[in-house]
Length: 164
Image 1 (cartoon, rainbow, N blue to C red):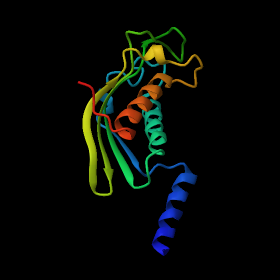
Image 2 (cartoon, rainbow, N blue to C red; image 1 turned 30 degrees about the vertical axis):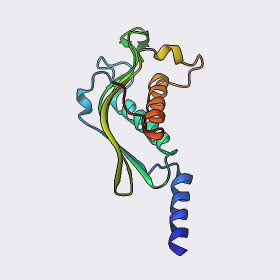
Image 3 (cartoon, helix red, strand yellow; image 1 turned 180 degrees about the vertical axis):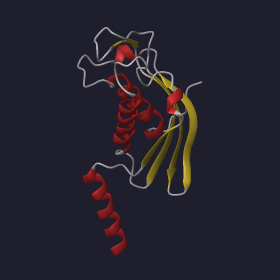
């Protein structure tokens, strides 16, 4: 009984702190990513992009059962749109169209205790992302957040296999 109380207390502390011990995110060679920062000096830095992607995954992980863990290696990032340097100096401007969907290459392992429930490596993208986009913007990573939320729901929560 005492062990169960300690486990519940630890889970409550994690929940209250906003931390997600169930999700670990590792960025593999981020300097080689296709498009995770503006390399021309305007727009978002690599550090900001990686921090936001980490927050997205950790937020999604809060819906995992307490006994499950998810390890994600981010192998590549290609943000939605194309940077237009100088268009909104010094911040830059990202022009999004249906030919520039967000794309991630991920490797993941979903586990329960020491048991591996699912694992894989896949490219996560949606060429129809603008059809599902909300008219109301919540921030700079809306398209990426929507794409990763849908992937997480299908692959991790529902356990559906990758298409193809």
